[in-house]
Length: 298
Image 1 (cartoon, rainbow, N blue to C red):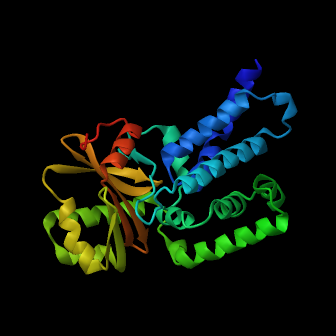
Image 2 (cartoon, rainbow, N blue to C red):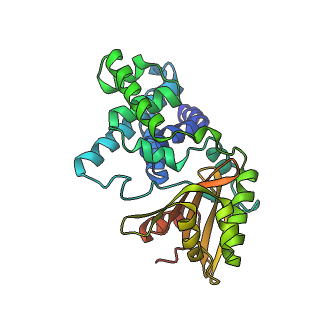
């Protein structure tokens, strides 16, 4: 009986826990692993000794994520300067989409923010994510980090300055998926027609395209440069499908009904300011599995 009650309470918190873990780790699959680890710890605990299950779960998932981040640093894993963060992706066709997945993506986070967060130390990231994004008091965060409250406050302040310095202008991002989709569709229509003027018109003059093909990130800057490379997205044998990428308008590109790549867009004031193109075989394989598809790279 207690296990059933714990399972119900956990499911009520799952969306929140995934949100914390995803912002901490920048990887949907790792975030799911952290959430599952949190459930295992809850299932082995004595619920009668937990006064606030929601707070307890947040603390546990945060600590799990902190350990994972510190382990990354110890192993010397590649940071996001050489790869793109793994996004959450669901097809946006109105039929195959799981309502629970749409709800999970409602509290979306931009790829750009994940890239900035990855530049922080594990302790800075924890302090900023928990306090600034989820309003966890500094006293509670300090206990997780084994620091004083003043030291934890300073960590969050330092992280906040770095985030603000690298994500200026994001506040004006177009909020509705429909508004974003209109611009993204115009971009692909122009690409398919080979209309360079229309392509440039859909792009911000300082647009940035980051493409991960598996051997590091290739970056293109400026509307003319990005438009000139857009032909690579308009091959006749590749089909674009509307998708929600981190809750925003994006596309899944298939080749012979297998996932070939995923593209994420940031749209500000009616024009595309950032594009992330995921085509690295290992990452596409992960995304395909999460979407119930086969990978074109396998």
